[in-house]
Amino acid sequence: MEKSYNSVIILAAGIGSRMKSDIPKVFQKIGGLSLLDHVITAAKGINPDVIIAVLNPRHKNFDFDFGREVIKVYQKEQKGTADAVKCGLQAADEVEGWVYILYGDIPLVSSDTLMKLSEVSRKSADTALVVLAIGSENTKDLGRLEPADEKGTVKSIVEAKDNVSSKTISLCNAGLLIKKSLLKRFINEIKPSGVTGEFYITEIVRLIHEAGYICRYHKGTERELSGANTVAELALLERNFQEREREKHMKNGVLLTAPETVFFSHDTIAESGVTVRPYVVFSRGVCLESGSEVGPFCLLEGTTVRNAAIGPFARLRGESLVKEGAKVGNFVEVKNSTISEGTKVNHLSYVGDSDIGKNTNIGAGTVTCNYDGFKKHKTVIGENVFVGSNASLVAPVTVGNDSFIGAGSVITDDVEEGSLALERSSRRSVKGWTEFRKKKKCAES
Ligand code: UD1
Ligand code: MG
Image (cartoon, rainbow, N blue to C red; front, side, top):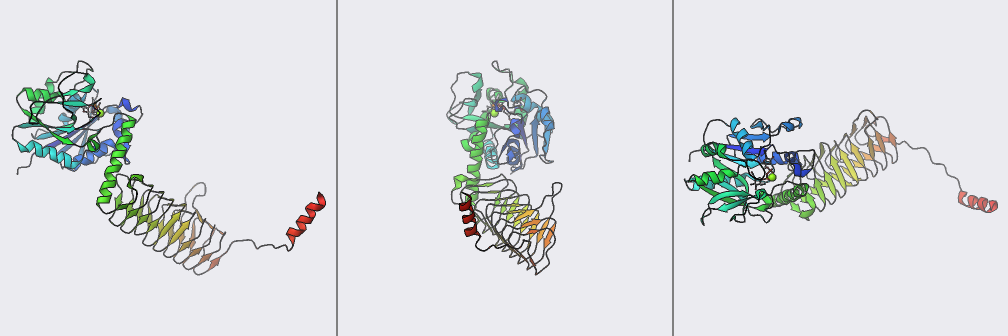
């Protein structure tokens, strides 16, 4: 089959005033990734010839990098979605083909669905446009489809905000795929809405239909195609995203014992054979290798876990690595550290900017004192070391292999291999003191 030329225009120049936030709507995040980046990821997944993001000039202050494949164009005035598409078309080259028009505030659209739209466009040669449709109960803010005939063709899209009564079906617009030649021919004929004064790209459906071409639709799910105009809707999108990710990970063989309580980041990697217990949050940059188990109530960020056990109640962050057979237990924080094979940090510890060798035991309450008020310093602990409970290791410090640190010690300089380091004042013992004190108190009263 001959490859058709595909352009994707993503509309993202709106201010999103209904969000009532200083952060533009399309830069709000779900699963730790902006709405716009989600759409761009889906667009990249269909391998189009060009992706164009239409942005607001005010977005220039925001730090974003979509990769070289995405062309950024700026819509000076937000006159409506048809005007935004016009801006996008200026950046598209002259090659004819099909144009996807996607909304930057419908982030969970998948590459598979975009591919299905293309399949519908190819099914019959007379198709000029395919609407990506969502069956939605909540049509308050959406564009509703008006059918042309019983065979699933569409006559127009009626914008809810225009309040025009017409014979619509219970399907709403969530994106369009249009023949580029027809888009270019009709886009300049779109008139502004009599109600809002905006130029609606959805008007293109009516114009194309009236010119005798066929417009069809493909229906996707509400979970995938819901948009966000308000913070409450943003929260619903986060819920939809989390449901999707949980299903994806379970399908890949990750055991979630209470899936509805586990929260993923867009980039969480979890191999088959991983177990995640209830109430766990994965922030960005987590990789869980097969055999790893994350116990209840843990928060992980920027951490790789290699067939090791984490939690319950553990926090790991900042480029940490926990190797095979290691254990990070309850009320332990690990930051920017490596815990090697078989090493145990089981209770109430802080391990920061540290490298810990194999088969070492870090006692309860151990703290690596990595910050001197100005700079962070490194702690290096060797293999087969025993760090007694409540020890403080004042970095920079190195603890040699096979050494012991006595409980309660404050270690400020290096510990030699195979030695005992004990920093503790000797105990004073006063025999019969309790009896003596009792007598003294009685005499006083
Ligand atoms: C739009 C659609 C509606 C669809 C709904 C799905 C139009 C006219 N209406 O309505 O049919 O059901 O999305 O959520 O297309 N934008 C620009 N420039 C502008 C205006 C908007 O780039 O001048 C961008 C926004 O950043 C946003 C997207 O276009 O990402 C949609 O704009 P929005 O105002 O959210 O339109 P809706 O009212 O949701
Ligand atoms: Mg919208």
